[in-house]
Image: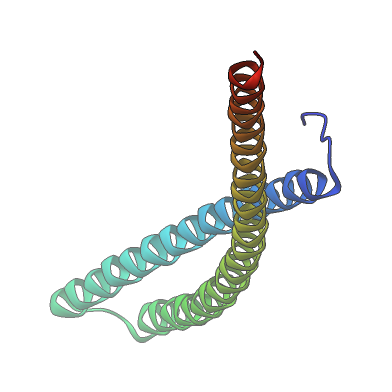
Length: 153
């Protein structure tokens, strides 16, 4: 972090740091969301494959005990899928909260940046006015000297 020379610059630096930290948190939440979604997708594919195996086994003839085992395992996969969907929904909510936090920090930083810009513009105007006054004073001083010099015998 650079050394701030005014309280407003300190606020800008702090707001930038907070925004950056919120951005990192958001990136982490999104990565977790992708991971959970990937797990859900894998689990869904596995359940589909297992159901297809059951269909194939039924076509070839299957005893009741094996059928119950297939069905129990499919039920456990369905439960796992339901938990994975809940986990994804919860992760999506965390992403949403994290996104809102980042946006809030970004708005704060933008507000401070606007104040800095306005202050810089005001200082520039004041400097231009000082330069104009100095220039006017020099011109007026020269005119007075020229008049005084032309009025002398």
